[in-house]
Length: 311
Image 1 (cartoon, helix red, strand yellow):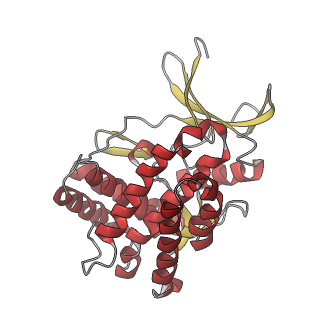
Image 2: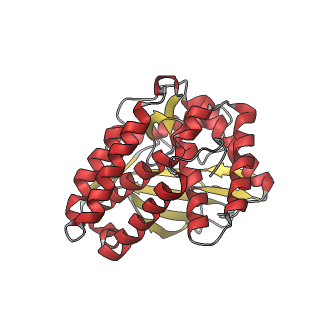
């Protein structure tokens, strides 16, 4: 290829670059060895290739001339692994129209129909009560040194969530590989067509976790005043109707969504403590914002006698 350009898009678990020529665009992910092992990267690659083969609309890894997907790059800090992905056409849409909401539900269901039936390795993590509540709380304890009341609230919330989940028939909940980050920043719309990407946090657990990640995006839009509760309710209903066209989800599973949402935030807040580039996210002012939203979720959506398609 001629006239190849490359620029940094974002630093995260790895460094993400846009690679472009005059005719094509690609995304290069250079992983951080402290956060992702080669086996974990390979499992992500395996899942994406399986999804592509099954017709799920995802950004997928590309082979190099030697037929390899994972490349080793010698950097100043040592060897780093990299993968080149196809570019997801379109752009981020935070407030979706009905066709886009339905297509998001459909594509998530297509993903789950595959991820519930395959095993592509054994190196990724499991999303459960321990990994999304109690382990993160241990990691976050130093962050709350000056806010013991806030930390105590989180501990009490974790215990209440654990108790709530123990009362449901979770043995019947569908399990498989979860994306665990279905926020608008991780899928592009080209008009109404959707492409999913950024499976960097994929792990194994209840598939309703993925429904939850989109639910809490809508809850955050309401909390910040960017969307009314009525509009969020409608959006969630359309999204679920698309999902249920291809895959069923029980009332019991949906009823856990507002409780699982706390674990989502604790999981990522704990992750922010693992590298100095996320230092700003663990500062008191930012943590206070997170805590305010979590309290809002508990106050607004817990212990409500409502239909499971509520938000």
